[in-house]
View (cartoon, rainbow, N blue to C red):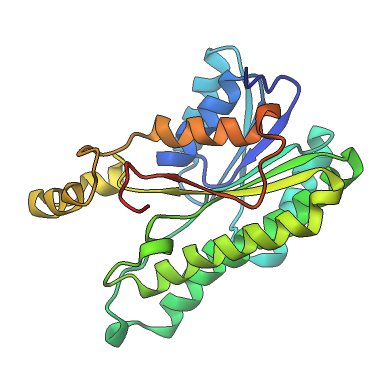
Length: 248
């Protein structure tokens, strides 16, 4: 099951955290993986080396998804170089937290540029080779806070909620071309970012999770593999909540 042999997958923001885990899991299922990054070339090289050491195929490409034209061009070039593009995982994202009264316009603009415009730019470029191939998978990494909200994260919540609308629009727009579009909304996942929270913050988050534990990067990666596979060919326009019951 979930065999991705012969598929080409692009994972934006794939050099660390959830993106790294997704890239490694897709490669383990046989996909040729291209990861993107904006900073941290060494981390990106390590992910590629880890995949190759396990017998997989991977490469890294540096560009800023927050630059619409650059992202569109870079994805098109990746697809041309790889001979096609079967799977796009729009994972790259940033969070600039602030209470609304302290939110700076430039922080809002940057958040929307990376999290929303970047995902749309990559999807637009990826869809072209998918149309030619008459198949494709678009997978957007949203967040539980895009559904339930969170104080101090107005910009981030807005960007992640927007991805759910993008998902539904593209699912309807390209279903006739055998291209599916789905979103994943992770909850409290153990990453370097959540590891920086203090003990009280972690306890507060866990209190909202019925399963009473944080999720793992592998939990998210497994959901991506499913949505990328043939087994999910009849699933489109959906939001897969991987959150331990944090939001139902």
